[in-house]
Length: 217
Ligand code: C5P
Image (cartoon, rainbow, N blue to C red):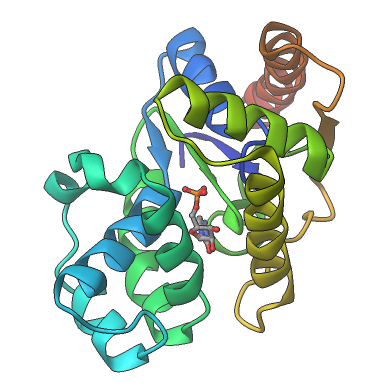
């Protein structure tokens, strides 16, 4: 197995940006696993079905391939909301597991970000990070992002959305978002994205040195 980096955390914590920058710095491919869940959510909505309907969501999950991950509709808040609803279905999570594990098995390694990477998808990852920030800081970031895109949503509404998604992701029975016992916690509430990335890079480089040592030992 190559050098696998598992990055988990809630929405707008900075984990996605950190994953992409780490990928560039380490020369490793990056999988944003949230896109898989968003794709299933969007396909269910397009089929005119309800994301709470497990049968409809599983049928959509079985058609997922890498092409759909490029779809622009996946970036919307409607996609995020549908994603967190289909993500509670055990059969759907199972259907998406093979794709994620195959990605993690690539040589010379891979970076995956999501909610359950360190706990379920890649429990043996050599580096595990849990990136978080206060709900208010995350709502401010998301709101600034939406405002820059011309979206007229209010900060208060954004905070409510973030909290609802946190509650659903933490409270579900199947693979709830959690901090793996061997993950390093990185709180980005008071950090710029550059500082957060620097901190993440140091943690991952230390893990890489340990991983290389254990292979040659
Ligand atoms: O990370 P992102 O906001 O794109 O994820 C959308 C939703 O997909 C999350 O709120 C969560 O419900 C679900 N998800 C998950 N497990 C992952 C990645 C995302 O349950 N590994």
